[in-house]
Image 1: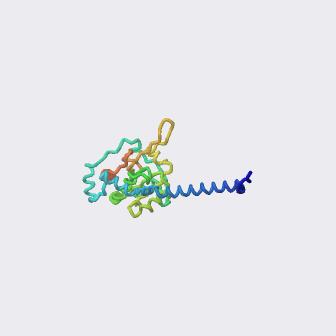
Image 2: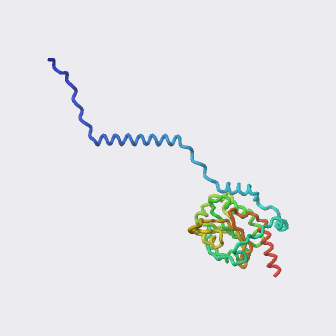
Image 3: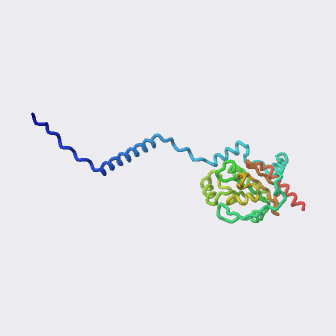
Length: 251
């Protein structure tokens, strides 16, 4: 019987650690490859929202363009555009007192805002809200008319002061750093007292409203609006302020 052909020597088995290491390297490599492919085919991130641009678009949709006539002409026409006050529970009553922090870090009280005349006080949702910011833009555009009547304008939301300062810096070149006090109302506590904010209670969902209040220099609320849309009829507000001025002059 012929001799059997020799067989090559059997290879020694690979150590288990080497097998695990090779599998791990293969998995990592495959993962990196898939990640690189996903980067190649990932859609570009959406453009950053421009709240200033959106706010100005809201004003255009509502034809809330800056007033351009003389104050005398606006006041002469104000009765045509006048809106009566809502039947708000606080009308005719002393305005709820407050001391809030402004965007610049200073403390602002109701008394300090009324020191030189009546106050137009606005409650808005926050700087994230385009139609809220649109109202602030509109107030800022027409601020000289309110000041000419001796009135102060202020706005408040639950935004923290540093958050408002950051928005002011971001939109400074687009008119979004407003020339009136913008106040921080933590947890909308002051808005709640002005009945613009109703916190959650069992059986009742949270409700937040826009609010605009005209407060005379004695601290009495003389005109009020609350609702799901901000108030931008400045011809009516200026007419009401002028009426208050005439009442004070006749006393």
